[in-house]
Length: 156
Image 1: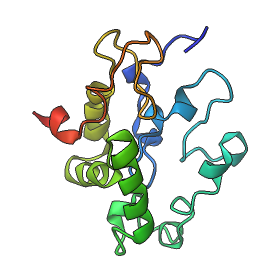
Image 2 (image 1 turned 120 degrees about the vertical axis):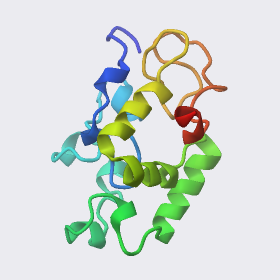
Image 3 (image 1 turned 45 degrees about the vertical axis):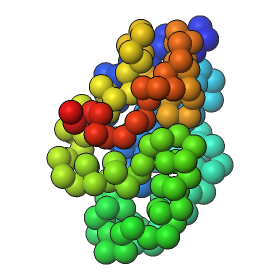
Image 4 (image 1 turned 30 degrees about the vertical axis):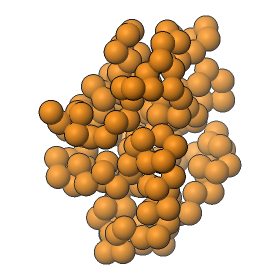
């Protein structure tokens, strides 16, 4: 992670969980040294990447009505947009927004964040691992075999 101190799992919080179930705390945009993204729930879109500030899921009319905090709470769940995003993340990053939303619903945000702290900690140095990388940003060790292998690992 360059000159900055590596992010630690304790930095994860419920506020970093996006409506789609993405844990913004493990996003490369949030973990990088420069132009750090504050996460989907941050009120100021000016510091977010364009694809994040223009996200169709974050801007969903059903979420805007205020009846749902997470997509999993919506009557339209899982919508085509979320299924498409989930498929891409399962394929490219071995992480599922739909699984995340299921666990958020089942155990609540605070317990989910506790599990994420374990799930995304580098087994070599303890720093946070990015869902978007196969090596730890802090120590450079490969985490491809340990990262994002599904929530089952965190619950066993």
